[in-house]
Amino acid sequence: MADAEAVNPFDLNKPTTPDSSSSNLVKGIVSANTPGNAETFLDAAPEVDLSLLKEVAPQDSMLLLGLKITLSVVSVLSVFSVIFFSSQLTDRFDFVRTVADFPSVTKDLVASNNEIVDLKTDLNFYKYLKAKAYFDEFSYFGDTYLQSYEILRSQTSEEAAKETARKNMEETKPAIAKAFMAAREQLIPDLEAKISNPKLVEGSSETLLFVNQLKNKFNEKATELSSNNEPEAVRQMKNYSQSAKIVGNGELRTTVLAADFNAMDDKQLYEFIKKINSLIVNDLSVMQKIKDKRIKWSDVMNEIQLRTIAVDKHYDEKLYQEIGGIRYTSYDFDGETSRISITGETKKTGTTNFSLIAELIDELNRSNLFGNASMNSFSKSGSLEEGYTANLKLDLDLKEE
Image 1 (cartoon, rainbow, N blue to C red):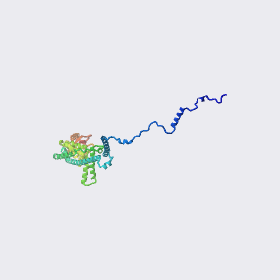
Image 2 (cartoon, helix red, strand yellow; image 1 turned 45 degrees about the horizontal axis):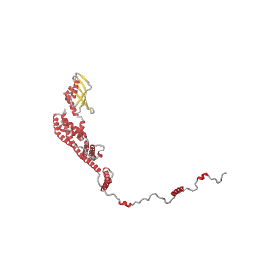
Image 3 (cartoon, rainbow, N blue to C red; image 1 turned 30 degrees about the vertical axis):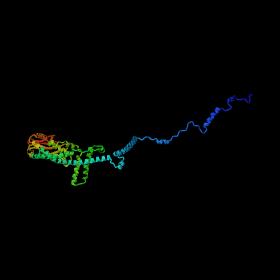
Image 4 (cartoon, rainbow, N blue to C red; image 1 turned 90 degrees about the vertical axis):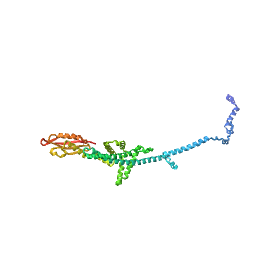
């Protein structure tokens, strides 16, 4: 039986009294976590006397001061330049330009260009009015020359008429030359002037700009007089309208400037006058165009008569019933083809009707007015005792001059 007071062997190794070193360590830990006056390891930070900094300043530098002033001036000028050029080249900052009361270069340039266009258009207006007047004189004297030349070269004109025509041509030629040279002088300068505003010629050219401006001015002047029925107003309105027709007429200007008037012979001058009249518009040129389209039937009939007499010497003696010959019953003309048709008959006591018609065709083809004369069919009737009658139907071309 065990002893009641027996001791556990493990209890024999436990210390009965606390260890002094362990106790001190625990106390130290506890005291560190316990609020109170903590023990510091570093001394307190030194205090800085800020008043000492007030006496410290950078040394004065003239270079630094100059840089500051320069930078300020450049900044101000940059801002002013932006505002100035923006107000000059655009519509922005208009209020600044208005307040500062300085002009806009762009707007002044536009106004100057518009003024150039207006002044040049006014100058062109009076130049072309003068040119129109000289062309009217040219057509007036030229009309006399054309008529005289046609008489002179006509195969049916009498010698006295040709002599008068030759004299008229010599008398009118100096007047034609004078009017032509005066009109030419007005057409030599260019219509346009140099401008620096691209918006005015946008989508076109300077030449077209001034041509349109001048045409518009003539048309406006004519419109202003359109409601006025007084003779002078009507004449002026027509003059303005006709003047507008020669504005921008490149073919007219080229023809006039390239012409050597003094080197032209009679035929060349005749053709030149007709050429100019076809390019301008006035009362005489309009009449000339009408006359050019008309057939000179008197010349045509005279030419047919002369060619017929060359074959039938009794043609104009009205002896057809007695001795026969050639007789015409009708004439027809096709304006689209310029072809003449002649109907009639021939009467011969022998059998030479066909030969007579063949001679007539050859004679007509020798004429300067006719060509391609022909007869498509031939028939005759009669007897040797009473004579033979043949139907006549001729077709021939009227030559263009």
